[in-house]
Image (tube, helix red, strand yellow):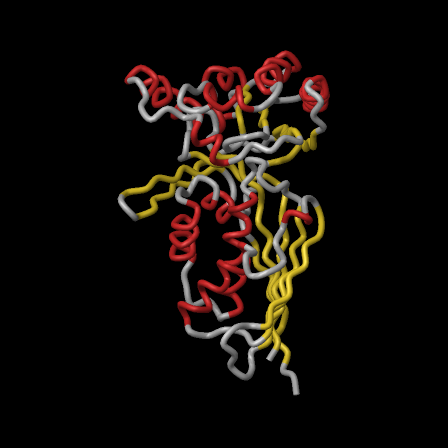
Length: 313
């Protein structure tokens, strides 16, 4: 019997301003992954083929090191049922390693796709727990799964998420063509922070949540401030500090690194094209090309499209 499932996962922007490792936002930019599986005679390992197309397709492994496959295989092993043949087709629109949740899309696609192929043995909450365990924190996987603005925290090994209201709006994303290694972004962070810096962020996080809910753009400039990670990571990305200044001068109300970078996210009521132009020009001055998008908020999250099963003879 053949089964085919297509999973669509949105990009995400995490670490929003003061929301370090806890606040994430889903964006209307999507990766699509189609699984075609044949269930028949048992096999120790499924015959595997993987194709990748689209943005950064050359960076996507097409063997068993592929993250989508690895997560799908985790579910096959837990259930004790696996396809004899599996084909994975990845259509990438989210740049890899950009601070836009590309790894979370792969993790969720593998889990959701395999779960659908296996007729849904796991609940959404269980899949979120698995995805969070793989990623280490829920601030990307939770909004990618649920859509919208999501607060996610860990209580021991338990994941607690809180979907939050957010006003309909568009954001600017600019991604310079610069590789910021995860180990470098993590190594830049201090091992300890001051009480003053902790209070600084803690006092701004509820302000940011309220400003995003009510589209209070004038307040965003204050609410998006952060002292826990951005001051240490901005110097790692050529031109990023100047890009923040340029985005604000062009009309952005709030500007932040998306994830650990190198992408920039800017919130504005209007003048989105001007913001793109100014920020792109700054990166050009530092000899960096860039991708840019003006994106609405995704409010749906991950979507699964199941094609009718077909018997083969």
